[in-house]
Amino acid sequence: MYVTIELPDDIERRLESQWGNVTRHALETLAIEGYRSRALSRAELRRMLGLETRAQVDEFLSRHGVPFDYTVEDFERDAETSRYLREAHSKES
Image (cartoon, rainbow, N blue to C red; front, side, top):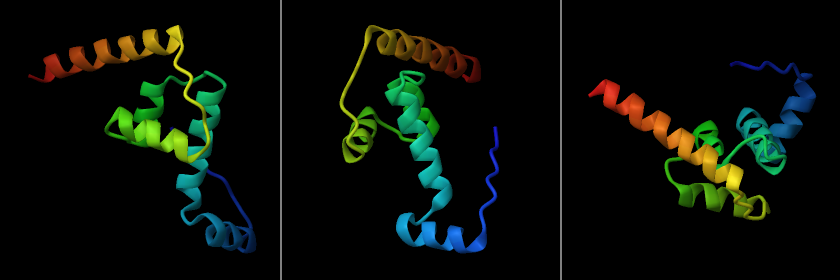
């Protein structure tokens, strides 16, 4: 999915001076809100942001002041993601 946001040039420059890569910042903000609202699991957050390890997810959440909240639903989604990835990997082999 691709999302396009049109910003006036002056606002884009101001945001870039504050945040650097505006696109990445928007993606990270969406991911944080998705995790906080429990719409996304930790595994989905990892995939969305292209992080390779759980430790990177933990560091990302910590850096953004998001408390660790691992629910049963998170566990079940992580298990589902793990099954999906194992199946996809076995089909590739």
